[in-house]
Amino acid sequence: MSAVMWIPDGWLIEPTSLLPADSGWTPTRAANITDSGWITGIGVYDPDGAGPLSSYQRRLFVLHVRPAR
Image 1 (cartoon, one colour):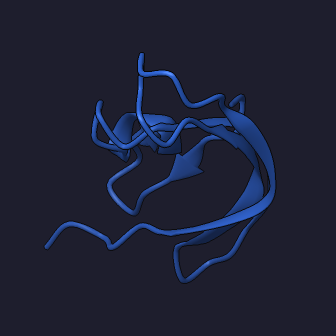
Image 2 (image 1 turned 180 degrees about the vertical axis):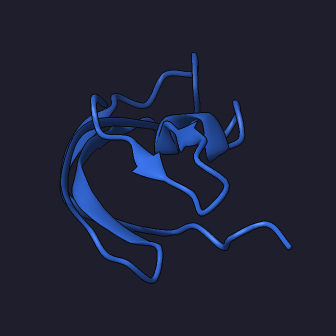
């Protein structure tokens, strides 16, 4: 995903870096990022990692990034 999110202290966050490595998700495109931290986009989901089930494209994902305190 090529989207980034600015946080108040001036740092950039790539939303993909916030997903657990074993989540099964590979976001491929961010469509929107709101000021309140909601991200929508398109991605590929693999329900069992390297297992026998095939991955498939999801037309929409929603991810909420909570600001650090």
